[in-house]
Image (cartoon, rainbow, N blue to C red):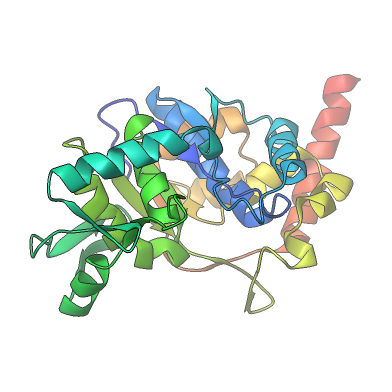
Length: 292
């Protein structure tokens, strides 16, 4: 159970290097539900510091997709607006001995002051081995060209935005040790991490580059409420498995109420298009009755 004892601010942080995809939507919905069910805020952050690959058309597509799904937000942040902030924070860390400048770049400098473990809300306690500790101490914060790395910009923004909880895929677990250390030197406030299983179809992990992942496919063929109902189950389980079987339709309003009592899942999940087709027919019939 997700026993929220205070409002939880959450975020979804897509990179505008491609169109919105089903994995992004799943993660966005879980973060949205965590915020709305706890009385917190849900933010969208566009991680666009990769200037060469970022494109405003992808930003537009991502924001339009969230609008189509009805995932209202409490603010949209663009990392490209915060470049001076990242440099200032990095310079402050250098002055405090927590980072070091070398060859025009800035690196983290923990000087042996490492955490031995970190705790994930889904996976549990994960140890940080000696090899990873050495890797952490070579983490670049600001590149020699003056641009922040993904790790640093993301953590600075999470602190500045007062983020309390980050739900994301298990493909980010390897980043979590670095992020935990960065949070530890940037703030005294606890930022919780929860990693949910990746999405598979026909036994194969869905890549955001797969045609089935592209949200254009879902926009053309499905009711947005059916899509939300389907992706909810790709990382979260109903608190009552018996009700889950007899009442598979979970509206956004019901999902907000049920979310804290449910359970996030680290195991991989399977996208079942037959189930999605069934949900789409149910939501379509509901829509027809409401409009009648």
